[in-house]
Length: 257
Image (cartoon, rainbow, N blue to C red; front, side, top):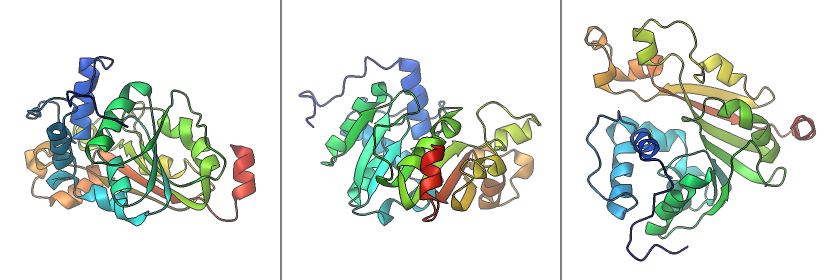
């Protein structure tokens, strides 16, 4: 993979508003937050994104996504994003394959290029992956921008994971601080609760769902006496799914997929 001669990635194929939304989401910040003062796709831009995403409010991400625990394993990184998390699997020695919609792949590739890292990439649009059955050790999924992604991809995840393999997925939380404080008790489309996310892969084992990602400024003043880590676990914006494909369910899972 080669970087462009001028050092800046062409992003004309990406709608400006879509890029702004994705940048804010990648930085785990409201869009009104201070913009990144660097050219899109430059090393400074990617560095600033990483500092914001994995900084004070995102210290949980490296631990929950297990960046350092999958050296020499094949990790499929699935979902539209800018690659800020995915590069860390490669940094720690994993064999990374990135699957995303084509308009985001060039920025993700560039994120790897600036760091001297390699990754295979594949363009995906529908819920189908051109990968062999039981060929992946870990699926790391970023499903924060796709309302139906968990349902669309669950069969493919079960198919491609090796027996004993795991999924680590980020999903929007139904009971986040904004919905709770607005007293919106109906379920908005695309948001997930711990219970329905845990049922997504019924044949998987050791299914754990944790709630994370909350800034002090998002908490109403009347609730700020509650420690932020406690509020985060009750009303964070993101659910983190971790589950294992059992060693004993290989054949039925393949048939179900």
